[in-house]
Length: 402
Image 1 (tube, rainbow, N blue to C red):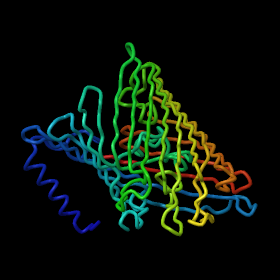
Image 2: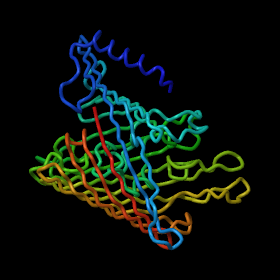
Image 3: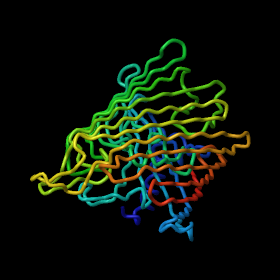
Image 4: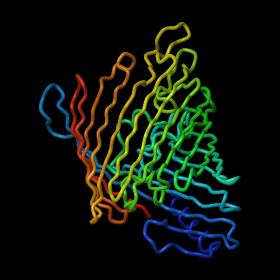
């Protein structure tokens, strides 16, 4: 991206706002920089931005020694631009989200045109009939709940080890979503997706097969306030107990990356090695009167996890198979301070990956100044790996949404 053009882009946004809109910037913090409505009300555009500024320190007891001097870092963890609204009809909505920080745009390769991966979301959603909504574009797949929760709406500084090892993230393709009410309160939601199977911003075409994802959610006590089932912490203080239970099955046919649609490409002497990779998620979210509890289980398997050359010899790449459990809870006080705790257990297949089981324990403290839009979060983690190195980690993060 040519940052010299940013002033021009800013000018064009302001000019468009004053020329074609009939409303100006919102007065409420956290609702976007601009809320633009076309003169004939046939389109809208909300423009927002957010950033996360992070300080982090890590200690380890390598070589059998006690925890020594920490490794420290300060960074812009995330910096995003977001655009959303509708075109032609409120039933045809769109979302575009761009990343600007180094961590956001890293991961470029020959499969992404050797360019930074700026685009996170670029998707159109069409409510074409009653409770049916068709998505087309690049967006998060209906995977584990922790991944679908926005990084700006997390209960602790960042997501768990389960998510970093097993999530299926974003991909390009179609999604169909539907919901139905059962009785007076209960709700069932179905989500299915057909995607390319190689993650976001891929430009080289379909190197492997395709990815098929299905998710079923059951909410026995009805909807959460303000879509709180996909927002961490009970900021709305649910007056009645609310529960969401979900199950996801994902099949990536002829996958060419070692973590389904993520991880490294499994290259061999004739191009890319492929195998079928399946991922299962079972999760839930419970909230009541400031208390929240989230649980997740993940499992990944492959038909043949060992990447091979055309003559059958091993390349050294393997599918990252295994399973993980993540439990997280928190309580929000009237002062908008929240204490939280998380336990994560990761068991990669030792015979395939050579990785030992690991446990991580995290205690967190958050101050929600303006909900998730302006908050300060800190957490302290202890990671223990069987026959490996134990680690301590401290993090402090400021989150600002405009």
